[in-house]
Every structure is written in C-alpha cells, then in structure tokens.
Length: 423
Ligand SMILES: [Zn+2]
Image (cartoon, rainbow, N blue to C red; front, side):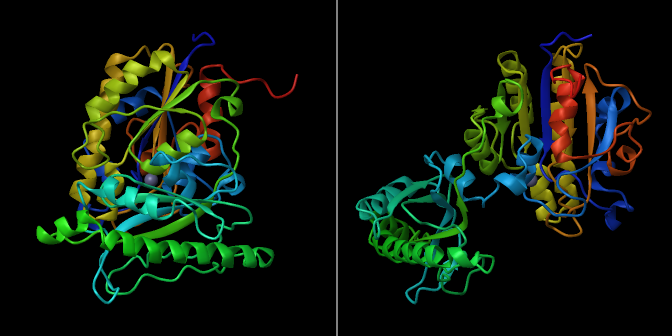
C-alpha cells in the first residue's frame, strides 16, 4: 500500500493509436508490434479506452497534452503559437501574439521553392540575429521578438496593445506559390476584426522586411556558393495568443511535475504550465531516438518529482508517413523504454499510465478522433482481465472509457494523492 508520496508517470507514445491496416491482416500497428513490456503492464494492470477530447474529435498533440495535464483546451487553448515560442525559449506575456515560423527558400520571383530551406544545419542563429536587429525598433509600435530553433524552425512573438491572434497563415503549406498575405481569419469575432487587421499588417511588414534582410545575409551568400537553398524568408503560421494559465502544481494539489518529451509544442506547454522541462540530448524526436536514454532519465529524475510526463514522438512519424513497418518499429521502441521502467522502478510506490495523445492511423496519414488504448499499472491499480496492449484488447478493460481530462484524476487516485469530493 502506497503512502501519500507515490510517484506518477504518464508515458505517451505520440500518435501511437491507429486503425485496422489491410497489409497487416486487419491488425493495427500496436496489435502487430512485438510489445512484451506493454503486454506485461496490461496483464498486471487495468486498461481503458480514452478519447482525448469529445469522442470523434481529431486533436493535435498540443491540445491533447493540455487535456492530459488537466487543462481544458476549450478554455485555455488560443492557438499553437505560444507553445512554439516558449518551446524555442522566447518569453511570453499575456496578450502577446506568437507564431511558428519556417525559414523557407524564395526564388527571384518570390515563389516558394523549398518550405524548409533545405533544413539548414548551421547559420540560422546568425540569420535570426539579423532579423532581430532589423526590427529592433518594432513595427508600428509593436515589439518584435524572433528566435531560431532546430533546422528550419523559428518563432515570432509580437507584443503591443490591441493585437489579435485571429489570423491566417503566411506559410501556404506548399511550395510553388508565393507566401500568403496575413489576414483576419474566417473565425475572427466581429469585434476583433480591426485588431486582427492591424496585427496582420504588422505580420506582413515583418515578412517583407525579414525577406530583404535574410536575402542579403552573408549566411545565404555562403549557402548559395555551396549550392544549398537560401534561407531567405521567414514564414509565420499558427498564430496564438498567450494566456495566463494556472501552474501545474496549483492545478494538482501541489504535485511537482516535470516532463521529458520530444515535441517542442509540448515542451512549450510545460514551460507555460511551470513544469520542469528536462532535456535528454539523445532524445532526438526522430526515428533514431534513444528510448533507453529517455527511460533512464525518467528513472533518474523521478525521485525529484511527484509526476513525470514522457513522450516519444516516433510512432506519430510512422503514421504520418503511412509506413506500417516504421510505425511498428517505433512502437517497439516505446515498449523497450517501458521495459526499462518496469525493471528499474519501485512499483509498490509508483503508478504509470501508458497511452497515446491521439491516433495517427496508417490508412489516413493524419490524426483521427478515434479512442486510444491506455493501460494503468502499479501502485493502487485493480487488475482487470486484459492481457495485451492494443486497441481491441483495451476496449475490454476494467476502467472502461475515459477522456483525456480523467487521466490525472485516475493517476492521483491510484496513489491516494487526491482530495475526497464531499464529506
Ligand atoms: Zn501527437
């Protein structure tokens, strides 16, 4: 029996849920994968099916992780921009409008020929510094903050009075066309149109000015000399407004939370929620990630926290690539990580939930609103009759059907770290 100091782990295989795959004989990737450790959790624990939001609603990794951490995305989510910005280390204040940006390649006619500028490995910090310098006096009274991240990724933050985040993307999400003009988005409330028009004008001035500065940069002269695509544009998308959210520990009775995750957006959410974001250099967020290094970091850090959130990105990549073998290999990575936890933690005093933040089925190549299988194992969990981990098996689980918002409540209940409702 746990005391009142039991540890909690939430372990997410990103996009790990799926649908029946014809080439796998109608099994899902989870069902086709070899997952001895996940099956051991199912045998010794209790399974459930989880809708992250309302049943059938496809959901992003950002909103899904918000729900899992107990933040109602319908209340707190105002676009992905703030998570992107915090994820790359830009500071945010309530009211700021933030964007993800791509360094992209424009030809002489302003047509996008590479949305990711050949995924530059070096030079983007210097490029970002040139952009920052160009806008050091702001645009029309609005302060401009810009920072480069990994490869082609960057973020933009606008700070000023009367901004709106109800804006369309400048990045048209495909090559062969010019960048789109930023405009008020179709869902912009009527009383925000004027603010959105003003903010859009600032964004368009940023895009135009940044392209001039970037094209003139010595970094791009060097790239051109080496036959590499120039990173001569910075294209914003995913506008979002920074809001005040309660810290994670306030939401959850003082529990101290940390995260070891591979998705920038989720790291940004962690910063936002004042959780500790623990970096593991071998966690690449790609297929080559070192799952044992991730699990070892969980084992190492758990004594310092009440709860750790962990996310391995690779299964989602296999789903988006519509490649069942790749997704199965990624799921087997998740399984090995879980195996390391099984072997190295005190399960009398620890509870884990393993699940997914959404389905990314092979047959759709994108997120769907199907329920994901989850399994709870460890301290306090009443064992059910399920013996394997997968979509069909979990549907017979002892916990039944839950929503993403239930995850923290269930986990806190298992280790008796939640107050009674009523007398
Ligand atoms: Zn995801």
